[in-house]
Structure formats: structure tokens, C-alpha cells
Length: 360
Image (cartoon, rainbow, N blue to C red; front, side):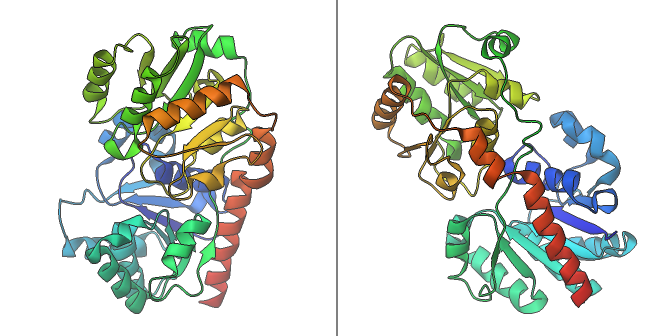
């Protein structure tokens, strides 16, 4: 058994963080795995995300202060040594920098997964990437084909691997629609659209609410998630006179049941890497519509998926209406089972980590 230490920026509900937990669940090395969160503390994290409680013995929080922290490299180095880490696995740019330098100082093999590449438009991020690539020489992984294509434009990424994210198809399963709607107090006879994720500008929920206003009265929208724009989005729904047709559910722990309640899952984001939510919905037998950003379209069943244009509510409404009126006959669950089972993702990462250890 190898001790694999994943390093993330924070442990708040999100695709990257869910992927890290799922990898730990299904890895051959799961009992030896730890997740280090640079930001936050255990108590606050569990309060915001109760799912973390069952992993608390495998979570470590560095309580990083705002801004650059040189002492964090020293503290992370001590942590990696105390854990007897065999491999350090970082996610996103902050952990890439701190975890990459700390693992190099410890002489521990380092792999890095990039979950999106649009943030490398930021000059400082490109500089950090170059620095760590020169100093630490990590093995790099992209979670989507489009992320890999963008990453190859940066130095030191010639040997980039692609390992796409997966979801647990034994947990995300089809259910009984009217039972699921009853559980959330949702209307039984509506054409129900659904969206999930952080209520922040980048996720595009406001565009979807505007699209709903252009759809017939029997179309409703259920939103699972919380965030800083919650009140703004509720005000938007009131101003558009659709407040009775938009159902804000807040943080939802039972996401399979949420998806089971829907007729169509929608991801109206302005930016994405390789999102998990469309895979989860499709594993539940619910077709998905995503905006053509990042690797989102790579998650779609080609026979049942719908591609939307980001930021265009009128066009979004027209495409959704036509889709619901004439749904295709594809089987989204079979697509996910064949292409995006989390067990396949975990095996790929395990094999990579084991090869790094043997080559060290």
C-alpha cells in the first residue's frame, strides 16, 4: 500500500473536491490516503459540508492565511514527512505551487491534475506553472481533452496524460420521479429543469433563470447549491415574475434524488473544466444540457445530450423547449457506465502513482 497525499486549495463542495474524495473512496490505496487542504479548518469544513465527517481522520487542514505564505511551504514539507508520503498529488494552481515545492524539498514524487486551463490566461499563474515545472518536474495530468490541448501550449507539458473524471454509477442511479419530487416539495406535473453548483457568476444560474422566463408556465427550475449570489438570483426571479417557478433548495446532500426529480439537467456555466454534475445526472438516467465551455461537452452522451450557448437566455430557452417537446432516444446512463465510471478513473491514477514510486 502506498501513501498518496492529495493537496487541494480548500474543501468546499465543488467538482474538484468531490473528485478528490471519490478517488480516495475507490483507490487501491484508500486506507493510506490523506487529503491536505491548504485553507480552512476541520470544524468549519464539516459544518459547511457534512459529507466530510466520515473522512475526518484522513483530512488535514493547514489554515493558510490570505495571500502568499512562505511558511506554508515549510509546514507542508513537515506534514508530508510526518505522513511518510510516497506520492504527492496536487490539484489546481495554488496546491501545484506549494505542494510541488514541498514535495521537491522532501524528494517525494509529485503528480499534478489540472482541472481547467482558462486560468492560465493569468500571467502570474503562468509564471508559477513555469517555476514549479522547472524545480519539481511533476508528472502532469489533464482531466479533459480540451484542458490537455490548452496545457500543451505551456512549457514542460509535452508528456501530459489525460485521465477523465468519473462518478460512482452504483450511487447515481435512476429512481422514481414522483417520489423524488415529493421529497423536495417540487411540482409533480411540471416540466422540471435542474441546475446545481455554487451560486456564483461563473456558473451562469442567472442566464438560466432568464431563459425560464421565456418558457411556458409549466416549466419550472430547481437549483441545488448555495453561494454569494443567492439573494441576487432570488431577486432576479421576482423581477421576472418567475419566483413561483424557481425552487431554491440550498445545499443538497442527497444529489442522486435531486437528479431523479428532473426532466433535464442544465449546466449554464461560463467556464468549466470537466464537470461532474452532468455525468451524475446522466448516470441517474436524466439527460443533460451544457454550455459549450471547457470540457463540458465531453461529458455529454452523444445521443441524448444538448449543447447550449453560454450567456444567451433566448437561444437557451428555444433549444430547451424544442428538446423537451421532441426528446431524443439515447441512453445517458449507458454512456456514463461505459465512459465515466469512477472505478476506471481510480485505477488509472493508482497505476500512475505506483509507476512513479517504482521509478523513484
